[in-house]
Length: 381
Image (tube, rainbow, N blue to C red; front, side, top):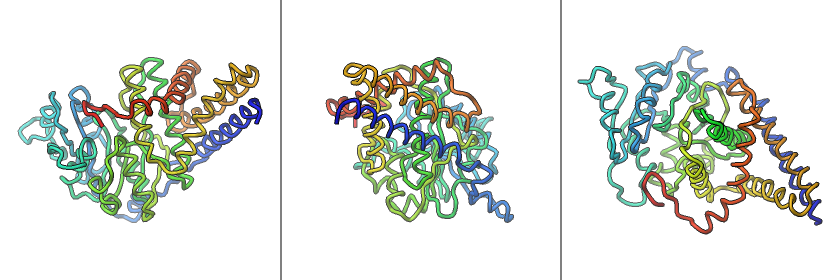
């Protein structure tokens, strides 16, 4: 195939796929039409289910209080909501801060917060999966929500995620964005919107992709059915491992709707290198993906690599392919941004995002090949 024809083919296929994702996001039912189990139960006069929010914390003294304050401000019935923080061998004041919320002797304490300590690993279960499982073992709640210590969920978050758990749904997720003050932080937020917008479109269309472990809800019954984290192979992306296991088993549906009520804010990566390492960790965990995600990976890689080659080998065709690619990305990001933020896409942040996206999409395969080990939270995997 002549190179200009290859350029055109890749650009058209990519634009069609991303355009379809944008259409799925824009036309998805709103929150009032989601028909979640909890909403139906309330309509029938039944009570909301008991829920436990699980937070794995390792050296999070800077952010854990912000997270707990947000969770305690939820509009979910207080007698049906428990917050369990698993301290994963922190070396700072994380446990001390959480204990102020959990101790009956502290003035700001609440019986809804409980602190547990993660044991030393004994076998393959270690790291964050062990922390989440330790927190889960400390409660008998039938519905479990997971967020990270650097996140601040909005007050309707618990209610919104529970409402997405229909009677046949075993796991559901929500969108996570950055608290952005600089242009690069805004670009990181757009990157999450891009990746999670595609994941939501695929998952809601019946092609399970993934969900984020800092904005997740699942049934204990679905977790136990796949053996929980003790029964799953270790992964540096434990959220995807659980999502995939439940989806592959076929007993439950998985969901990933994009709603404003379940949009969580997290803190951005501190630097460019930190943000790149984060994507590298995600890519390493995604190596166990199914055919749907591998096809999306391959298309995205080609859609970023081929136009760059085109600029050198066939400049006019390369520019045309690049314009098509940027236009498709803008359509998707506009759809996600307007749906969950009620805001418009900003050109400056979009251009920084595209530069970052091109860089990691074209270099991550080689980076993982040359250095497959991942260092995360002071541990090497």
